[in-house]
Structures are given as C-alpha cells and as structure tokens.
Amino acid sequence: VQLQASGGGLVQPGGSLRLSCSVSGFLLDRPAVGWFRQAPGKEREGVSCLSTWNDITHYSDSVKGRFTISRDAAKSTFYLQMDNLMPEDTAVYYCAARLSRTIATMRGEYDYWGQGTLVTVSS
Image (tube, rainbow, N blue to C red):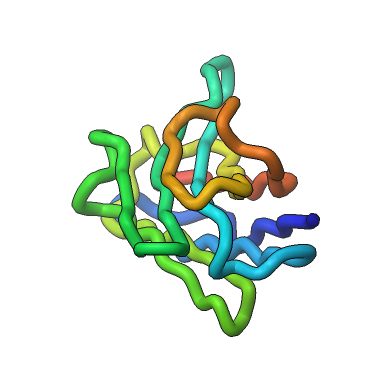
C-alpha cells in the first residue's frame, strides 16, 4: 500500500490550494482516509477525515468551513480543498489511510501514510 501526497506550495493569505493523495494497493471504496498536518515545533494534528464507505466527514475546528475533503474512487485519489488560507495553516500536510471503514481523528489510528507536502501561507 502506498500513498502519494501532492499539491502543496506557497500561497498568499486568503488564497486556495488543493492537495491530492493517490492511493495504490487497495481500493478506495474500502478504507477511511484523512489529512493531518505538522507545523514546525508542533505535534502532528488531525485536519479532516472521510469514510469512503458512507461518506461521513469530520473537520477540526480550526479548518471547519474552509477546508473540504473529498474522494474520487475511480482515480484512487482523495483531496483536501483548502480555501481562505491563513498563515497559521502553514505546515507539512500528510495523507493517511486506515483499514477500518469508520473515520478516525487520531494519528495512531491510521495504518498507512503519505510522505507529506509543504503548504506555506505567506504574503
């Protein structure tokens, strides 16, 4: 099983980015998937997660209303659309997948991880 994250970059405050995570090794209609981020000097924190079984989603309070998680099972890819970005969103973003269908918000509940993609929000 491999996850490959992409789409990070430099964006001005108020701007948008879409992160992608391609998954190989299992069907994307099976697991729950999620996005985490880690800012310099901070712990890795959950951002959003999605059950590919029933499409239930969850967002952290800090991104609710600004970020949207979605998936394209045909492409074995899931996404994180990030709008109205703020400097405090600056971090390395990681995608993750777990074999269970239910969503999970804790880092330790995920079985597979992508390599991370850097998002920098700065003017």
